[in-house]
Image (spheres, helix red, strand yellow):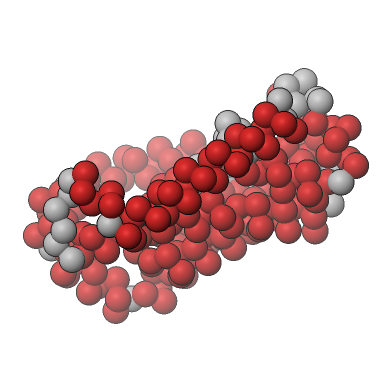
Length: 222
C-alpha cells in the first residue's frame, strides 16, 4: 500500500507538471498569491494535512517531508500542534495494526537486532520508550514498530510518542517556519540568514537536543 501510494503520487506529480510549481523562480514570482491562498484556506489545508499525515505515518512514511510542509504552511505553533497529534495518532494506529496482524513478521525482522531492549523496556516501558524515541539513529517507522516486540500497552505507547516526538517536531517545524518567514519578507538566502533569530535559535536548540540525545544513547542504549 505504501509503495502504491508513493508511486501514484510521483507519477501524478510529474505527469501533471506539478514539479514546475516548486521551482524557485515560480515560488518567488507568485509568493504573494501562494501565501494569500494559504491564509484564505487555512482550516481546509490544515484539516487535509492532519488526516493525510495520519495516513502517511500509518503507511510507514517518513516524517521529514511533512515537517517541512508544516513549517512553511502553518508556522511554528499550528504546524507543531498538527504534526505532533497527527504523527502520534498515525503511529499508534500502526502499532495496533502491526501488533494484531504482523507481530510475527516484526519479530522476524527486528527481534534479533533489538533483542537487548526487551529486558529494560519491560521494567518501565513508558519512560524507556520515551527515551528511545529521542535517541538518534533509529528511523522513524522502525521506532513506531519496535514496541510490538514488547507488547507495550497502547496508552503508554500513545503518551510516550506524544511527548517523545513533541520537542524534535517543535524545533524542526520552527526552523522551516523561520525560513518561510524570511522568504515572505524578501530576505536574501545566504549564510547570514542562519543568524536570523527565527532560524538561529531553533538551530541552537536542535544542536543542544542532539548532544543530549547522543549522551542518552551512549549511556543507556549503547
